[in-house]
Image (cartoon, rainbow, N blue to C red; front, side, top):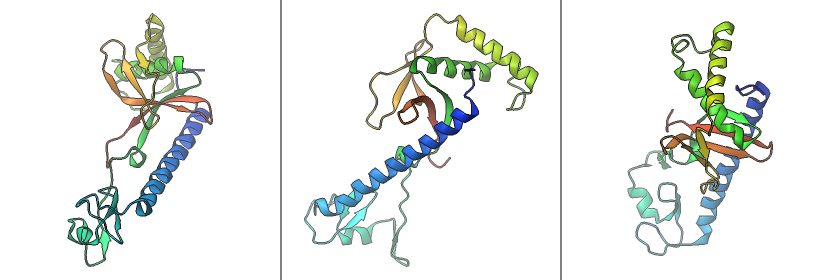
Length: 198
């Protein structure tokens, strides 16, 4: 397989990541919905209430008075204006690279990095013309082949949301992108989460 992610694999990864996001949202919704019946302690005043209102900001049932006094409550429409942007399942992502084996993931990421830093093609438009694109890809592949040890290390243990940290072997820094193992399609993917609101 070439160092660029094939279009069919790219489509599979996109589909699977969207499915994963939907599952995460469904699980989070079910957790929050179950909290309505699981307890009647207000997370703000820690008192018991008979009927509470599900609050996304406090992630639990709050007293009705606290909801009405909240800065996000819109009295004209009796509606909460709080917008949640922190959870991973709400954020957009960008695919960096995908492959079948975990050991090959660092090569694709490093090859992409070399393509982005190539001084001969960095001034050209994003989809490179065929001739320049082939030459840049050959230079990137040569840089990857020249390394005796992996440039990026994928941690063995996943984080609590199932993502794997990627560490730069040269500097020891944790990268802003993460690795995901998509079990349903048996593919490893490197994904970058975009900032909230992007």
